[in-house]
Length: 159
Image 1 (tube, rainbow, N blue to C red):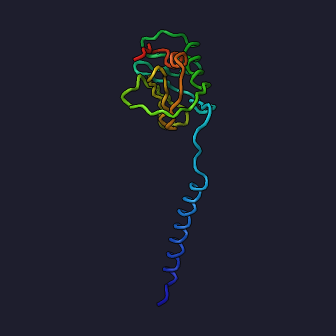
Image 2: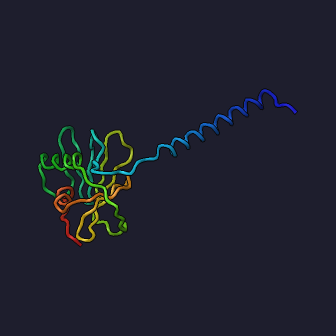
Image 3: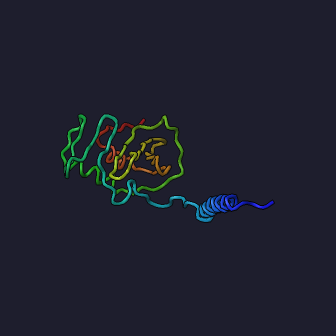
């Protein structure tokens, strides 16, 4: 019983698909993603921030300047400095895991060329602040001063 030309074409197509899936799987096994070590940037390098939002506050780029929607009174320079701090700060990765209901606050960033916002949750536990990067699934260690600077529009109280 021989296969027709059409049947052989189907065999070749399915075998090529299986080979592609197999090679793609091997690629991920041979080159696993490395665990983050050392200081990590909060935002991608050369990112263009359009909006930064905290609960009750929204900082938006208007041309080359910034405006805030909320009760925090800040100049355009203070807003620019806050966004610059988020863009340049590097924090150490730590092996911590806290319950999501312990989050003190959250910061969300809308970046140019990104469909979804980046989200960072602030936690306080055992006299230490932590920042959870939801996209990378990393826990980052923060000093109290860094937490107060990054979440400046909010009054952080140690709970």
